[in-house]
Image (tube, rainbow, N blue to C red; front, side, top):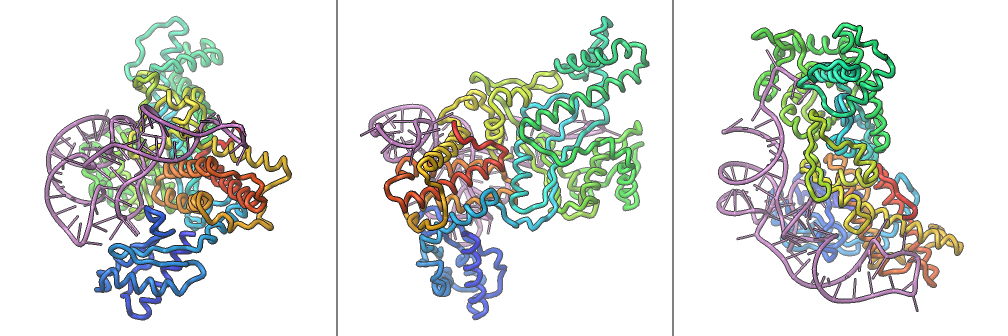
Length: 553
RNA sequence: GCGCCUGUAGCUCAGUUGGAUAGAGCAACGGACUUCUAAUCCGUAGGUCAGAGGUUCGAAUCCUCUCAGGCGUGCCA
């Protein structure tokens, strides 16, 4: 609906430009918004005030000329008003709104999908937790945001790939091996001091126990290096299996699991380093190899290969992002914890050095999650093994509630996850409020079906819905495609969560003040279409968030 | 010290490229079920958008400074 009005507006503007009344300008800036108050019309535009200065005319003069031109189109608009300093308020024929219901019913699950993204190849990399321990609550937020963003981008017409980068090599993995080996030896009565930087969580003991079941005392005979390697591989595999299971039960899907070690195996790290060298973007100094990131806006150059000859984490990461670019992604989105924000300038530098434009890479930073249980904050520390796992959260409050709660805030704001609230099945809990709306509609449809009624467009006069609560609900339903597009293009998937709340509110309000099934056959038929369309939109939006839409509660 | 994020009603938070009288939920108070799910709805009350300047027709939104909280600032990942 909104895009139709925008087209109308742009047509009118280009006519005024052709007539010489307005100077040439970018018509893309001409957009319509939903006014704050229904009295200001169905849509409004501030374009007259925006171009007034360029046209060297007063905003109201521009607005009045535009008003005249727009009034030629009486098919859609029944009134156009100039208000305040130069707003143009557009009033649609009310019956046009009810036509949106036809579109929703016709498109079904596809309502909300658009071709905005035009099939552009986008990659979203998220979670990407080291396989050194189970996913914790912070990863949960990244998983919920990432997966919802992937689904949002797909709905907005992008060709999206979801990827998990597995850091299956390096110091942390070695630490993991050492930690497991220490626990393994403990099991066999050999006491030794636990590695200082080791992982102290109980899951390490469990893995050591499994290892002992498979290998018996075999590792005691091995040399240290070999034993650590065995432990590392065994542990990484076990932990990765757990991570995949957790993500799967969190309804999070990945198209590809990309392992860091494959970058070495396929010589991609070496190739990337050589690429930088041939471009004269790296140099040796103080026994280390440096990358001239400062030439691309970073505050100082960064080390690629340390004095001891080993590579930093940054080196394979450059190779990894080079690989993403080589795979043809036009837009690369990395979702990171906000504690990595210092890493952004150097990654941007790397992207620029690889010859890609600044807009093709975006690091979406997710702020910290803290947890409240029994009214008190819960302390967490990964290395000390004190953390709340994603698994515990899913088991305790359920996948749907957890996913919604992680999406209740903008990414760049810290999130307090209140377990007590999440477990409440009451009006304080928005998930139940939304799911309840869906279940209520299903119940109405079921009751209708029992008396032989079902929502159908044929012979149904939707124009009966051009008033009051019916119209209010339709307006909100009509906005869904726009919400999806804006959430995708601005990388703000939380908007889907807030939109759902709006739909549920509008429905509950409607439900309490109006009857769907009544003696009035024509109205009943129309309202069955209305609630059926409402159910569809709620289900579609919930699907984007990876949340179930229950038929009864 | 420097950098990033945040500061909006008692609490938790929205606020679409700068737009019209800043919005929800919870908590408080008062109402609505013989009628499709009361896990719901309606109403009342609640604000110096942290503070101070600036930019302009117009600022919660953009710029500068100050204050407060969080996170970074490694040849860790």
